[in-house]
Image (cartoon, rainbow, N blue to C red; front, top):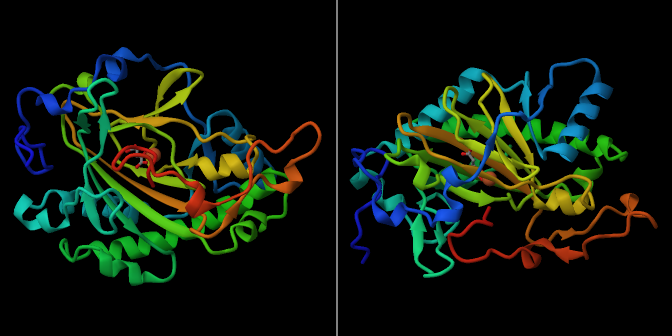
Length: 337
Ligand SMILES: O=C(O)CCC(=O)C(=O)O
Ligand SMILES: [Fe+2]
């Protein structure tokens, strides 16, 4: 039984100083790493009529940053707000009411998990200052909502509506990304056998007494194909690695953050990069985000796209079956979704 001071479930009072089990070793503390304000990730207007320009913008963002924000994406902003509100309500429930959802098993469907990293020297687990609610989803088959909590009462219906909207956005983005790679619009969809797997992670970062000593999520890349991240406005927490510096991704009102994940890097034979990112915490404000991941199915074969390989661009990855090739790493450590 873990006797160290409890984390801070979202609804608990914040302690005056950070309990030791959250304190990261020096080299990976966020205050030790440089945060650059020289760059910001590209903002792409999905509402444009100029598709050639849209494809060009997405292509250059996938090559340069591996991240971009989309505006005029077609998902009602009111719905996005409701999603973040539902997540906040869920994680604000008294611990007794949500304890049945809490797990120590990584990636359990419909469960709340707390990430940790292992101290390289002592092998001790260091907890992240966050709660993450993980579940599967599907754009059309809303049966997945039975694995979601029924309190708050609208949680299931709000996430179901959002899932359909995000599904359409993903379909559109996969088409534009395919075109940007010089391929037919439905290439990636077909390559992934139209048989995609969908997972989601809602993250809640309570205010933290010493944000310089801990993280909300450690540096990681996402393991699927594409991630669509909805983040709360008015508080910055996401950092993206660019040329060795961390770049803060300030929320743009109404925008969603899109990032290339590992399988798209492999499919594109490294034309596009799956980039390290992390979440930092904040002294005054809580922060909420929802990452919607789309990836290959367990039995889908992944390999660099044939059309992108020639003498000058030899295949950089071997062919493998997604469910076998993906290493989950240590339980609860990042590489995860
Ligand atoms: O909260 C964030 O901004 C980052 C979330 C994230 O990277 C993830 O859930 O994989
Ligand atoms: Fe991530």
